[in-house]
Length: 153
Image (spheres, rainbow, N blue to C red):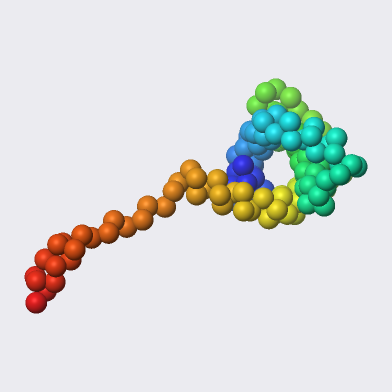
């Protein structure tokens, strides 16, 4: 999702159509992500003002801010769409205020997303290692090493 977000935040490089459609796909991915982690959201939400760690509170706050910033980014993006909505037959008048809010919310989303990834970095690395374990080079047997030594002499 992070790589797709980076691509979507650079419409000058990816093009406006890719920016808009990829952003809509990211909105669907975010909803899926939230649903997959809903139990954590509910559990930490209940414990937020009770006994919990500062890290859990910070994480919950960042996730809430990330959700709000991304929601504003997507909502304003849909309202100022010049590619996706017109393709669906919907046209909206241009609104500079919405465009400014869209850019600011996107910038804020990027900052909060960076913090979100930083907090979860060890988990991300652990998952990557679990999915793609590093292969250790096979050890040569003593007889193979001896043959290599004979050949080089």
